[in-house]
Length: 486
Image 1 (cartoon, rainbow, N blue to C red):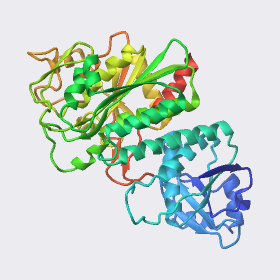
Image 2 (image 1 turned 90 degrees about the vertical axis):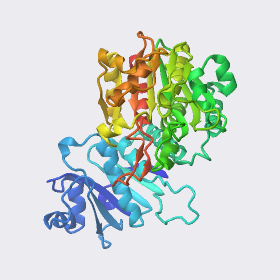
Image 3 (image 1 turned 180 degrees about the vertical axis):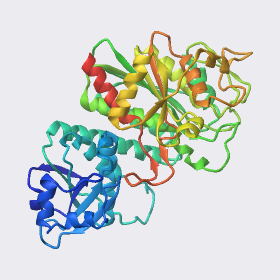
Image 4 (image 1 turned 30 degrees about the vertical axis):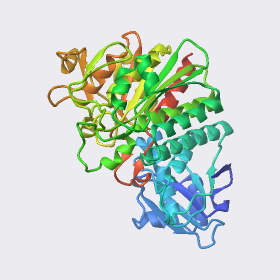
């Protein structure tokens, strides 16, 4: 997609469609009023007749009838102006693009009065053009936006940053959308090798046997059930400074539940159980591009969770990389088990501040649906810093507490900790309670449970069904904030 900017008047731009964002109760003013005048008040009339009210994600197309060089004007609703933020800017741009694609637009100009939102506008355009039909032999002719023109002042740095983040996000979404027979642990290792080589990161790759010799008994315990080779991957970028950001992504490339097997309904979607690891890989691509002045280390435990003959059994006990022992009550709570070794390993690599991303619990979907990710951690200041980064990235999070009493949930009679509680309740919290046992008290740590937000069951006005790439943009904003502090 070619991206440029222009200071031309809206009524002078030559393109397939000019999209303007209008809010509820808003009449054309400024540049939009001039455009309206050139169209013989067609925008005002459309609003007066109630055909466009500026409601969130509402779109209306107006033919220009050769009154201006552009063929159409696309009105896009921004909703309540007082509630308009970075998340909605991205989504509203996406809604406009989805409508533009449906009517065959190839060249699109977008105008929003607030020039400070142009980065989000570009991201929204990219995200809305993602095609989930990877292996369709007959493609639906949805078209594509070949040229995007931002109407206003767009500096090169903002443009470059938006493109890097957007392309990385769609790269992550494509990876998640791949079927499990294509996106195997070995394939993800291949992607990690490409990134490490291109950006000169230090790379470590341990196969199942090597991981076992390293003492990664938690990871190996889950990996044993799969015939597909499993790998533990670590990446290191050293940009300087005292702080080291550690990122850990759950990389279960297919989750059947193991011996504690899942119901068959929607099991095919469990190819997305590596969304956390994919987001971490996408983030490392961006780290390589921007070269921040902080250190970043990443760990990716990559395996399937299958009920093979060597598979882990309920009641088994594993010894983790940290030395702590884990009693397996349910093999379908495998994500936290592999993350235990991932967390311990980034601590070994010097992480002072950690974020883990995982499609960890069904409980977070019960609590938040697909509208927000769960966030938990310590200390309060680090949780707030990650939450602020998520807000700036337009990715909603909601904090769950961890009370001292919650530690009682995972008591085991035979090991240091059980992987799930003996009875239902506090599922999101129990997952985090387990993970924090593998992070030293002195290390800042946040857990993002993205089980509800990593995959959309239905299409939205601004986003297709399927993978979202959630978490990547939060990590980018977090990295930028940490760099400013260093």
